[in-house]
Image (tube, rainbow, N blue to C red; front, side):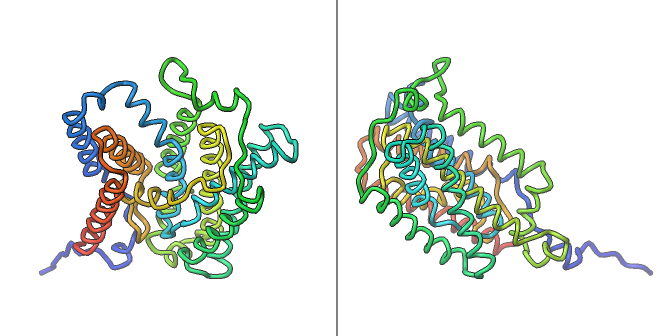
Length: 326
């Protein structure tokens, strides 16, 4: 008499889980937040406030796209805030001191971010440093360089056309900077979900050794992922400079924590192999709605830090408990 079993082989059980549908929880949380703040403040549901939230999360959202890819491969990037500052200062220094045309300076600012990402990727792959230590080192170096460029002074006075990128709403809704954020989100979402190259990132995050045996160049993908995250930090730097009409060496202080939080709140696993751009977008909006709503109801900025920290802890706890149940 033959017997059958439904138990999957061990090799099959180790296949990394690619979860694009696990955004229901964060989405419900976002909806509940919106309902709560709508009841607490008459101004929350206005179109003007919704557009303000989009403007406020643009920089965070662009950074979170790169962080999503880094976390998916099982890494972490603590340097994005400092890389943003260095890219912003490099763009301003090249335009104001070196005399380069601003569009060229903008491109070189993004390239500066990519170069910083390359350094992080090489430290992780060639020097074999843990991502936490590698990016912590890059964070310190880039923050120092951002201050060295102008001896800690900010750069002000960009042309009107540049600041208009963040202030003029086309068709009454989206500025150029918000449009860039939305387009980058769509491109990244399609890349991770539908392209074989993007899906390889999930395989690396699930099990790097299995991915290597399957023919995936883990080292090259890891380096390119950090380069992409750095380049996106450069794009975020240009966006922030347009919003502030200045370049500031102190820009991006602490934003790496919000960036990681947005990705984790959106359902990504810090263990790697799980995440989605849709979830990250919801996580970014949750943080944006929290800050905006708490401001509208008059909550102290210090207490806001407590709330955001509690949300981060809960998101990581749910992720950890969910993995332990499997």
